[in-house]
Image (cartoon, rainbow, N blue to C red; front, side):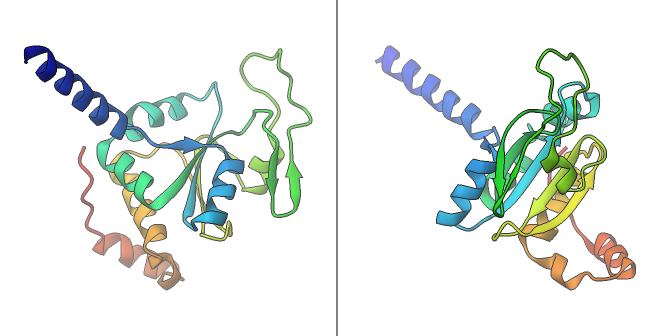
Length: 180
């Protein structure tokens, strides 16, 4: 009986640990998934040498509220903006022709990163349910600062915010719920 109880506790703990991770996929996988079940796409464009990108992984993408919200509302994409992945997007193929696998640190910028308007790392990019580009959000964000962007796009509130004044008002009235 003790062994069964121990086994149940271990399995339950494993489930909790698993539930606290973002379900990352490639952009190609997200685009395929979108065809079967439309959902917005959240892209984390990072590089291997980027310190703030590592902080985002460590502090923001492990927050239980962020994990739960992203997994529920988005297809989450982890995209190395200096990597060599081949992406097929809207009848175009994006590559990184300057990629050097021997290079340590900075590498050539991927064509898809350029197409998404990524000019700093990290940059999080949002796409709608039809893979239509919505917006890039640059820099390291805490869970609480990322929350407003996750929610404005997931709820389609962004369609009502058209001016700087409306964005300022939206921010002032936004009541976050993500924990620290």
